[in-house]
Amino acid sequence: MSTLANQLVLAERQDVARGIRLLLGRPLITERGDPPAFELIRRRQAPLTKWFDYHCGWQLAVEPRLGYARLLKIRAVPDASRPARRPRSGKAPFDRRRYTLLCVVAAELLPVPVTTVGLLADRVVQACATDEALPPFDTASRSERMAFVDVLKLLEAYGALLTVDGVTESFADSAKAKVLYRVDATVLVRLLAAPVGPSRLAVPVEDVPLRFDELLRGTVRESRYGGADASDAQRNLRLRHSVLRRLFDDPVLHHDELGADELAYLTSPTGRQIVRRAAEQGGFVLEERADGLLLVDPDGIATDSRFPDDSATARVAALLLLEPLTAAPDGLTPEQLTVEAEELLRRFPQWAKSYQSEDGAQRLAADAVCVLGDFGLARRVGDRTVPRPAAFRYRTTVTDGPAT
Image 1 (cartoon, one colour):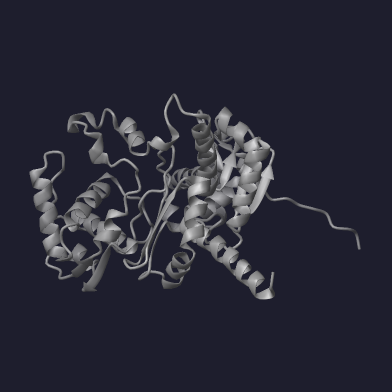
Image 2 (cartoon, helix red, strand yellow):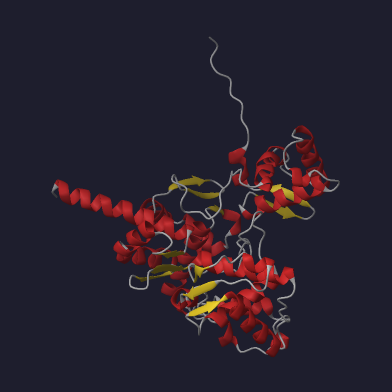
């Protein structure tokens, strides 16, 4: 093979590896939002589509003329650890009200290519008033307008809504604000990644609260894996996809989190070979340990959230609390964690000012534990927070150098 051919093959491998990690970190990439990333994915569409379909069973939709690439990631088990977040400082997760408004706003945007913030708000008011299952939407309330703005900013971040004139945040201050939008309906309809649309479940409204978990599982049910009478090929396909989905969606995979059949597949020669090849093709460093697997992205582009990270007080506290937590294999109680948090606040009085209050240490400990749980570094066992094996990667070690 010529030198030029070698260089072309190497360039394609590097592009595919980068494209895999870009899409894992941002499953929706638009040409308007990130032209270089979109161009790379458009150029390497075929190998990227093949990689995601074989290893994870995820569909990659690339629309060059419409200007977007969407990786339809499906989790076998619904997970609330990655909520939609408010764009304002603090990045608080969406509450029930904001999720409700998100669904209503998306539905009202579909038939209109262009709208204003006032017209859209009026449509939402009417939609909520005519549907008994929806609480009323009151634009006279500042808290309601703030929730509405959070929804619009999220849709802007996705590229489904483009601000032509005005500033969205101005609606929070006044319901008379003037903002003009252009709607990208093609991106809007791609936001929902569930293989079974909620409307296809056909359940009476009054039954939804009682059967919510069942209905949520129904939206991610995939027929390709068969049912109780699945063939060997279907079972093997399900095992491959379920194991690799968990590894590439949550890069820490502990063996004790897997079912017996999943663990048997992962530890088999074939399973290990597939995992290693997939990690290499994606440009990851794979750490294989007795208690599980860990994927490391040297460039840090494959994740939507990082640890360690000093962007939030709770994440800094989570890292600092790992030291006493890993020193107690049986875990710590909420009271013990609060004592550790109190010591942190005492040692650093100018830090974590929002937690410098009477119940600040308790809140800080609780928020830090949530961070550790989201990253698979700790879990609740009874009334205790217990470190997971991956947490020991961050434990401080002291080594003695040779005497001079």
